[in-house]
Image 1: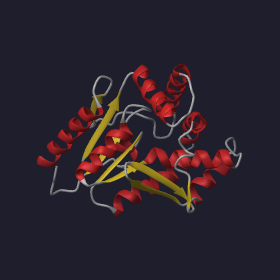
Image 2 (image 1 turned 180 degrees about the vertical axis):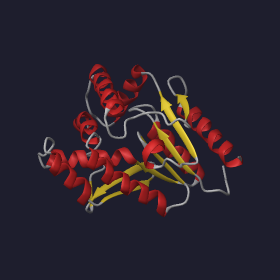
Image 3 (image 1 turned 90 degrees about the vertical axis):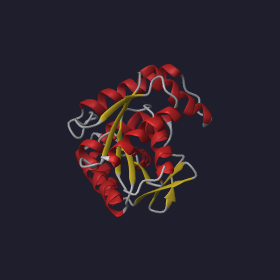
Image 4 (image 1 turned 120 degrees about the horizontal axis):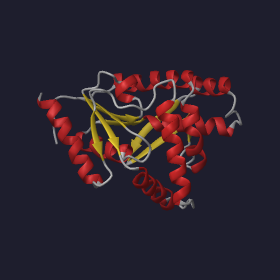
Length: 227
């Protein structure tokens, strides 16, 4: 699909709703830059764990502000490096999963990372950015806003499969419990909670394939472009 206009696309939704996978395919089809904001919060969480400062908000804030977090989307994978060190695989673990929502609640952490995310979008033309507060906080003037949802059961199955593919052993129940907990934390936090932007289009991905998701999103982008 070729479009003369370079649009800003914001995709939000809870864990396991299909944001990352569909956003990657959409960006690739359009030749846009793909930005996984969740990877940035995971990077800060991983660094906090490595430095044993998960409970020290001031130390975590310092990490978020001072770390040079770089994202590069190569061959379908978001490569994450901090201060020149690749931590791509290290941020996709059950341990990081269990702590990232708590780190994301910290106001100053969000402010620091939102600034970095907005700079990414400003430097580039067409952008597909996904996360939890893109359409409401990071890119409130995005040309297209999409909010993906799916049942907890379906999201847990997807995440469990992802772990299995990486050789990580974890039970479906454990993943489901973690997702429920993350949903509560993400949607009730005081700063930038996970909510659907008033002008976002909601898409339930529970019973559609990734290919169908991508086609739905591309259709919404095409409609916005034509208008």
